[in-house]
Image (cartoon, rainbow, N blue to C red; front, side, top):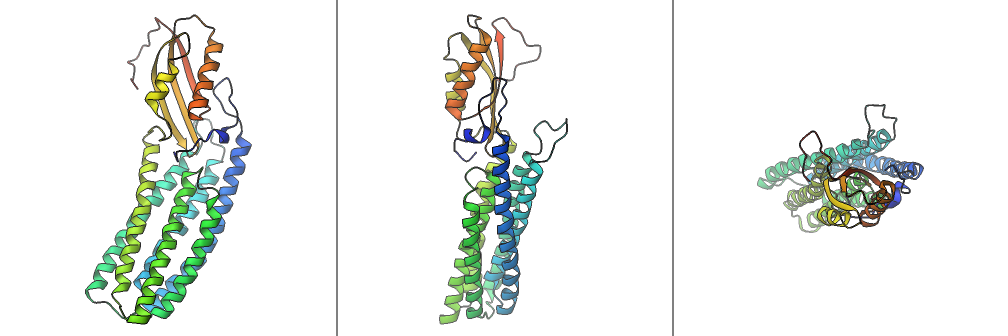
Length: 317
């Protein structure tokens, strides 16, 4: 989903289309969960300081930043819970386990960010009509503390953001929050030195735009996964033509490529053969081809003779 080759996270090719290497996946998930919880504690503590500071200094920019931090705290908690849930035994009916919980968490994060930004725009508009007095010095001091907390959060989450959409969602939250703190510091400076009270609602609206921007891509990618869109790192038409190249293959149909959760992609297809090669030999070649082209090991291939008729209507891909 993130445009990287994630083959390393699935272990090695297995002739039956399963991937082994779950202990590696679990240590990844455990590391990500620790990162999220540590950032959650930092953000939660500072959110309270920003709310108190925002009320004392009468600064909307600080309160906007605190609102953003609240959505950080909610999303970090949800992300950590989703990672824990994805590792739980799933029972016989949930054949994919709880992996999609992570994508649902990422979708919720994106949606909550949009709601926060709309609220900030409404407040900023009202304040721009008659800018209230704001204590710039106090506001600036608290915003500097917020920036330091966000920088620490970015460092903590950095390691897990490449291979996990959920952690990347949390990292984006913290990044736009850090930019929000920079904006709040700027407003504090303008108020402290020039008495420009209008800069507070104006800069809080800029924070709102940052929040909106950071949430858009996350929403788009989460919806893409839920709609079973092929990962952006895979060119499906190229893969289809590559699968027809091995000797003995007549055509490929019902080719599907989709993402179960971040770093866990799957391929399934039907292969019509002329019967000139042993099935296990052809299957091994096709599996290796998919692995080398896309870095995907979760592969299901149905090999069919030329005259094979399926009872139901074929869903073309």
